[in-house]
Length: 122
Length: 238
Ligand code: SF4
Ligand code: SF4
Image (cartoon, rainbow over all chains, first blue to last red; front, top):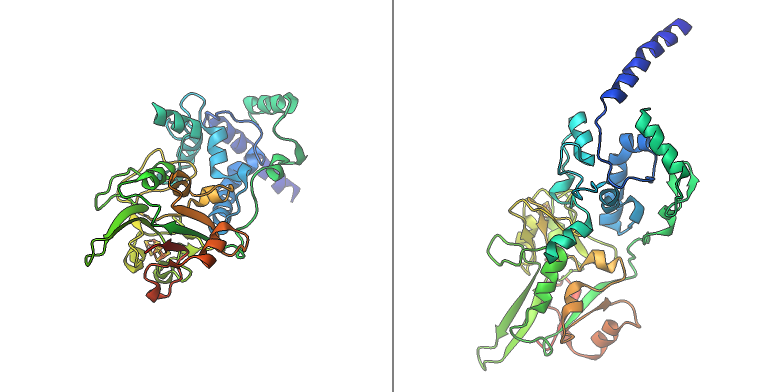
């Protein structure tokens, strides 16, 4: 049994390390402390978003820190204000790597509100 | 964990976290301090009263404000979204005309909700009828069922939407009573923009509200009241 565990560990650790090394380099934008830790968010952000969207749209419960807008606000690039504009943009970079299509931005704004406001007054 | 990552964490640990205080691992205090987390209440019935005597012919301020607030193009072609329209009606027997804004009437018994096959059209507890675009498949049954022609279909890909008003191709939309503003305690953009005070917004159920008092004291009508949908939008002087 012990042998099996250590064998598994031996196999897993290099794999995990390799995954970290190959992980996409992202432009995290302003970044900062998230509502949950990074690893939790990597794994579960979609569940959080889906839960929050139902609460917000259907019941009117608006938790500011967990709002979709808040994600964009923190993670839009500080150079182009977007989470999708470039290969290494916060959302695109990871979704490319994981080969998962993002539908969110067909409706949701992918830029900071201030950037959009600026564009309007131009 | 990569080097950069650990450094970043270290940096975050040492930097003065002015905006957030950790109350438990992964949970920040600002989560509880900010945002209106109250659910829409069924004790409330949001509605509007439109005074046609105050509404000026040719004035389009409410429509312009709506377009700006919700990021609509303002075009009025057959495939353009219009959430609110100004209409002029004329009594052909004597030529008397009235001008009024027309939008989703936020029916108590909304046919759009009845026909929706996906549950995307729904009525919120406080009476606001909305489309949950996450579920809408764009079948447009609701557009056909609405007696007020209140809904529009988004035909083209959209960009740079207002972050408060997500909207996109392939889904149906209509006046949301500016739900994103109501949840912040503001009034709808059209009501705010009307200089003639022709649009009165409020809670029809609240005995102390201006709209409740006015509906009780002056004669108001619902458009196509014969359909018994009990719209939340009422008109005065029709
Ligand atoms: S006016 Fe039309 S879209 Fe609005 S609630 Fe009534 S049926 Fe639905
Ligand atoms: S177009 Fe969307 S909201 Fe309207 S009936 Fe079909 S699924 Fe429901």
